[in-house]
Length: 100
Image (cartoon, rainbow, N blue to C red; front, side):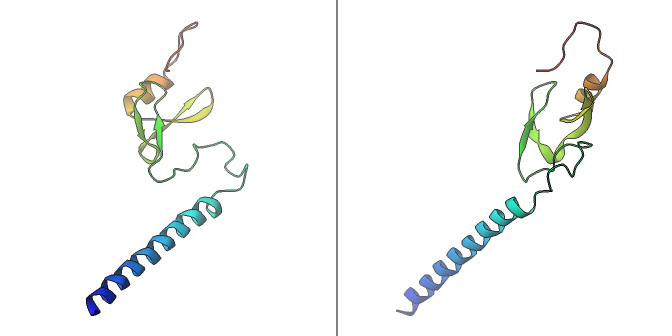
């Protein structure tokens, strides 16, 4: 009987911790966002944990937190490597388009 109580206690603790984790994630998503217009467009949006973005040059997917900042037509973008940043920021001949 005591083994059954112990297992039940472990299950209840696990469920309680899972609910707390979900609540923390929920609150961070809604309370952690900056006010609209506060960033001023000077840098890419803040990264969420594990958020994947696509490189505009080579099309590779990478974690936003690992991206390198670059500028495309005056707007901040993230690229996957120094090579893609160089291609993105290089002067572009008239009539050519670059990236995907």
